[in-house]
Image 1 (cartoon, helix red, strand yellow):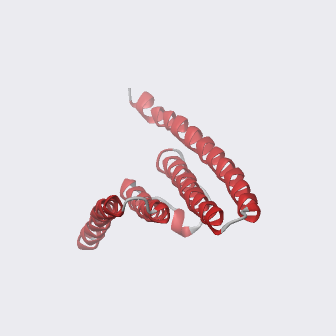
Image 2 (image 1 turned 30 degrees about the horizontal axis):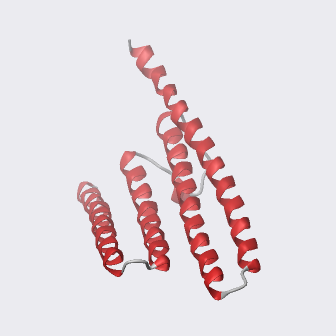
Image 3 (image 1 turned 30 degrees about the vertical axis):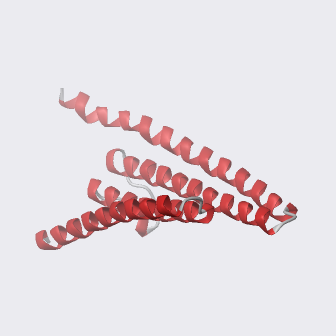
Length: 157
């Protein structure tokens, strides 16, 4: 049973491979969308069409952030269960709390970009305000969680 459980960690390779492939696909898809948006921006005949192109570019940034999240998750799962990788210091994951902190910080960025995308459209001011409040609550919760974990780590260390 011990040998099965020890080797069972390699099942994580399914998550590593699938999220890495998803990350690559998302990067390619976002790049194609960005090229298309830049083309549309230069083709824009009016200020309104230009603004729409810029709004679409902001949406593509969201796609890039998603690709980064998938990549970080893939790398982290590999490092936590399979073995060490040669990575920049900021990307090294030592435990699940490190992974949660890194993903939380990227999710905060993604939420900010999502709000910016919503703000650029500016369709219903009251809905935009409620959206801002909801995002603020989620961001506050994530930051509070990260600070709480950081404080707990300092107390234990």
